[in-house]
Image 1 (tube, rainbow, N blue to C red):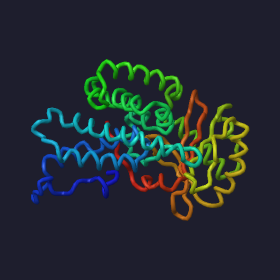
Image 2 (tube, rainbow, N blue to C red):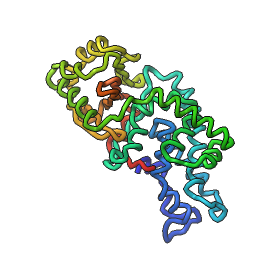
Image 3 (cartoon, rainbow, N blue to C red):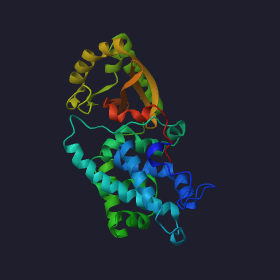
Length: 312
């Protein structure tokens, strides 16, 4: 489970029961992957999602369980409120971020890819779309469209009236619909694009890759000011192809590129001297690659050493 060292409760119950976990612990652990998924979709950061779970757990241990009608909904409400606080802090932090900011990639379990709606909601492309929403819009969209919570439950989580939540949900849906990938993206399309990228790296022949790049393709790189990356978005097939042509040959000489399931979709992981150096994901619209995302910031790569279970 993600973040075990920081967020997993003590094996004893909150009351110190040495015979095993108490009721609060058992309930929290039963919903832990769901809560992590809620926090991660709201934040785009696994590290911050883990911190939110820690805060959720601390608040949960002080709750009178006998007074809670729906423990799952109550936990989601705590997690959402803590994620909203963290999201506003993250927005200020991103204002001073060096270069482009990309979501923190996760090495996901096979069942995430099998849940098409969940995989779509945690894809790198969708997480970037969610970044364009306000914090409250993002919370409402995630809770309604991904987790199918009722409007009154969402209203309690975001501290708005159900009528206001309905309006926010409508606005957020329209905003996302105008920006999300066009058409269903199959795993085979993504694999085909990444196979072409890998062949270009290994052979130096860019042609097959260029054949599937959209004219307005965008290349984003996130080095976090620690690793070298394109400092700003590179837009258009001509500019992107020049950047790729200049860099791919060096990549092949320095390490190895291997396929993986990242955020529920095919991606490539580049290793140098056995250590993860870069993750490459793609966005596909109408069969062509419209987005290439390269995450190099070392602080964002730790969750690629083990699989993360996400749940709806």
